[in-house]
Image (tube, rainbow, N blue to C red; front, side):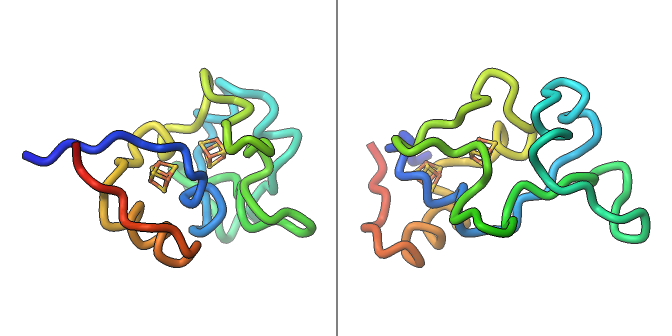
Length: 104
Ligand code: SF4
Ligand code: SF4
């Protein structure tokens, strides 16, 4: 099986719509404070907050200038599970004008 190592390009944090759960906000209070709470008719147990897109933000509101995550230790589950080298990773890189992430 091919193995990939994330090169911290940040493309995944500024390409796809990022929705996270109430449990993520419970673990990291900044999610509730700084992202958008979805209206009742658009939210469910899994998706309660939108981190991207948001007005006036070109990336997730927690992506820092050096492409590091400002809440890395308590980041949402979807971020923990996002796999470097996956189809979504490679597509985000392609859309961002970055080269394909090569396996190691
Ligand atoms: S797009 Fe892929 S390589 Fe870039 S930060 Fe996200 S997971 Fe890492
Ligand atoms: S919370 Fe962190 S890892 Fe998740 S999309 Fe935002 S900047 Fe990226």
